Length: 306
Image (tube, rainbow, N blue to C red):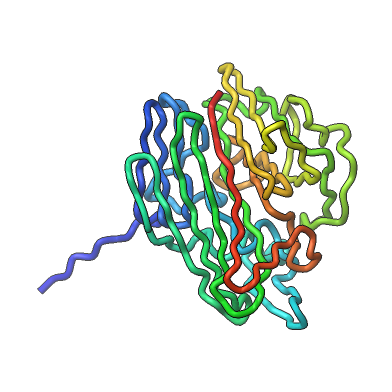
């Protein structure tokens, strides 16, 4: 008697959303945006369903975004240690759910809701539920993320997202970038924050700036907002289109990476990451969310091709 084995996809179940000329594919693993296009033009760098998501493509970064120094932090009188995932820099990178399988709680032709409860461990003993709703609207792709503490003690929490914006087949050097923020985060050799400075020179992206020669893996804080309370990153492309990412007032920082030395990216796109806090917030406390038992935190953001 023989047994036929079915190899599971590294991206898990695929959720295809369509509205007019828009098409998005959201995966169960990492609740990732595997692709999003408008009239066949990529808005984010797509990857195949048979691939492990390259460089956190489209993934949810929780319960902390970015880097945690040495994987060790103190909270309310206790010390916790989580596994190192970036050994070259001795950091724990991008939280605990970027490669976790999310359950589907709702799905239709234009929207899907996925959720995952963080399994308590000695390093992070809080059962936080992370719930994502992706919806296609006439204005683009809308994302709502809710973190809820299901435990009995207050949990440290942060969240971010990791879409790689697509230049539409062009070179990144032929694009412009604009970031709504007034201070640039300085870092050490491990890309951990050392302070912040007023934007200037290559880091002043308040107006669209050519990406020619700019190698970025940087964060910005003191984000600015428009009359509707939204902050934006805009990637201007040679085809005359702009990939625009907006985020609400729960976003306290932007991370931008041009992927020059990132394996599988190699400067093919630009990561534009809305975050509730910058790297090492579990240690510094800067913009850290303190989720009381039963309390929730919500952030919304979205993508559009204009």
